[in-house]
Length: 348
Image 1 (tube, helix red, strand yellow):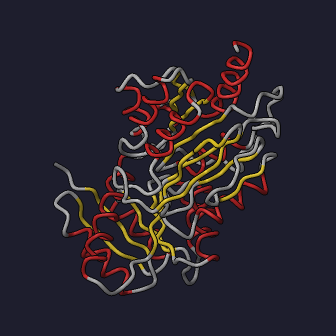
Image 2 (cartoon, one colour):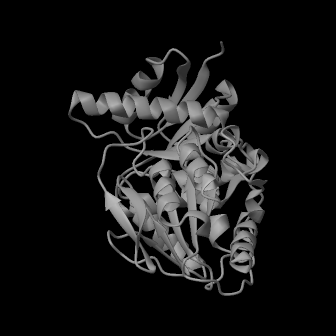
């Protein structure tokens, strides 16, 4: 079996050493080279032809974003950003995902041995996922999708979305065409604490609907999207005629918190056939069982198509469980969701 070739670009010798140790401890991967800045990295990429690049956000001579933008135009490859957990770092990281980075990790926190073991497992998993990712050449600025015209529907309707690797960009593609008249939307995107607020704020600036990080107990309103906070589970609950979100700190489900399964199972229980559920790009199987439960209530269920996924893992698992009514290309998901919502309203 050929090992996954990894190249690390980071100006910190400590981080380079830690990542090298993590990678070389794995039986299926090796660190072929490290570089302290993107200028050195360019020659090393030509020399070693790595499968995955780990890239620091802030570096001397050329920052990570400038390098990533050029790389995705000239030699697209799977890139994992290694980010500092700051407001500036989270914003730059989200920009990197827009430019085509597959995923990101925060820089390791020095200290407990147990924490480093978990970080090593996380890093290795992300490298394995990135090595399988479908990377597309970036051709300049992507045009904003047009807002879809849709009639008003009852407040009992709800849209639920789950995603993981590649999901930040997929969610952006789904939310941007949504009209202000759309039903409330609840979203679980696998993301660590400290990033979901920035993610929601960025989407809120470019979408017609209001996008926000969910708060415990708040009412779900039409024309609003609620993103589960990183590190917390989110559930939908019903109180009379209204939906609310409930946050909790229960243990991870399928190794994730927030968990797509937990969100979709709560939507199945609270909204049933009044919901439309969608599983987008992502590694693993979180969400497949929840989508099946939603499907069994009579709700419409969608999965993103393999050809438009960065990683066709979660959608594939949902399809294999027979939990999916329609497999849809990313640029048609918003329209398909609204078509099904309107169709439900007409049948009632």
